[in-house]
Amino acid sequence: QCHLAEERPDRAARELRKAAALEEGDLGLQLELARVLVEIEPDAMSTKGTVRKVIDVAEGSTEGERLLVIGQLALGVGLVEEAVDVLTRALECGEKAHFLLGEALFRKGDAMAAHEHALRAMGDDPNDPNPHRLRARLALKAGDRHGALASLEAAISLDDSHAETLRLALGTAARLD
Image (cartoon, rainbow, N blue to C red; front, side, top):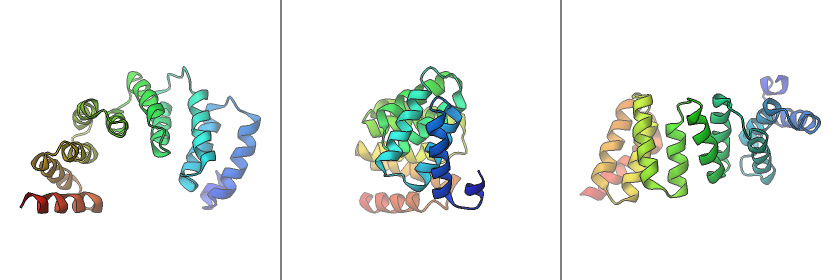
């Protein structure tokens, strides 16, 4: 934690690796190592391996909040199938995981299930623009530019500072003309 506070994530990762090697079954420690590695080396194979190890250590866990974080980390390093599994478990534990699960399902190619979870995520938090952005991407994938634009307008009404949403909206609107 000290190295993280000093903005030295490389040192924090080194110390966490040492501790994690001694305590392989400690989910909290393994999870903290994975979080640091995803922050500093998201594309490294060792990071993906660490996230896989966390998923293995969390097998059978019913700690929904931790499962939510693990699912987000798995999604962040491209472990889509694993993210779907872990986020489904987080949802079963009562966590509001619909948006992340919808995102994972979108990346997996399951548009119908992704859309269902995007709608449920909108119910979980009506002020979150992320489910609207997901619905826009789903609509674009299906060729529904009008639906995409409507979803992007909803996302922008909730957060007009997200540059990617604005670019996507402008591009979609231009294609409607």
